[in-house]
Amino acid sequence: MKKTRELIEKNLKLVDVVVEVCDARIPISGRNPLIDDIVKRKPRILLLNKSDLADERRTRMWLSFYGKAFTTLVTNGMSGGGMRELFARLEVLQREMQEAKASGVARNLRVMIVGIPNSGKSSLLNRLAKRRGAQVGDRPGVTRGKQWITIENGMQILDTPGVLWPKFEDPRTGMNLAFCGSIRDEILDVSELGLELIRILEVQYREPLFERYGLSEEDLEKAREAGMAMDDYYDEEFVDSALVIMEAIAKKRGFILPGRKLDYERTARTVLDEFRAGMIGRITLELPPK
Image (cartoon, rainbow, N blue to C red; front, side):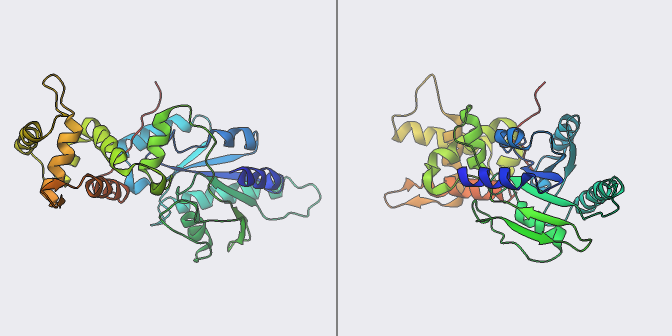
C-alpha cells in the first residue's frame, strides 16, 4: 500500500486527469479516502464500475449524489458499457488542453487510473486500449506495478495497482470490501462473512435471495425447528434468522457433511461467489447519505 501511494504521488505531476474506478455495488466503501488527499485539485472522473452487478435504481441515486462534485459516469469494463461516454469526455479534456497550449506544441492527454483492488481497473484499461494489454483477474492484486499504455487517439493511460488504506474507521467498510472480493478470502472467516452477507440481503434484497435459492417461509420454519431440536444456539426470545436462512440454503443445495452436519463454509462460499457473479441479482449494498 505504501509503495502504491508513493507511485501515485510520484506520477501525479505527469498526468492531466485522474480516473477513479469504484465498484458500483459499494460506492462509499469502494472509494479509498486517501485518494482525495493524494489527488487534491487534479481534474478527476469518477466511474461507478461493474454497473451490470449493481441495483440500477440505487446507481442512479449515486450518479446524482457524486455528480455534484465530480464528472461521474456509469461503466461496465467487462462489456464495454459506458466506454463511449468516458472516451468522449477524455477527448474533450484533451482538446481543451491542446487549445490552451500557447506555444502551439500540444501533446496528448495523460490519464492515471486509480482505485481499490478488484474494482475493474484493468478491464477498463483494456477496453480503452481495445486490446488485452493489462492483466485481468477476478481477485485483488492482479496489477503488480505501473503500466503506461497508449491508446488509438494517442492518449497515454497509466494503470496503477489497487490500493487499500491502513485502517477502516467503520467495520462495515471492511465487510463491504470483503463481500465484493477486494480483500482476499484467505485472510477471513468465510463462514462468518457469508452469514453477514445473508443478514444484509435478508433485509435489503429478501425476494431475490429467496428466489435464487428456492426458499419459502415453510423452508425457514423447518430449518428453525430442526435447529431448535439439535442445537443450543437458538434462544426462545432470539432466533438468528440469517442463520436459519443459511441452514435452509445448505439443505436446498445438499451441502451436508458426514454425520448429517450442515456444511456452513461451503454454503457461505456459494453465497459469496454467487453474489459477486451477480447470480442473486443486481445488488447495491449502500445508499447515498441524506
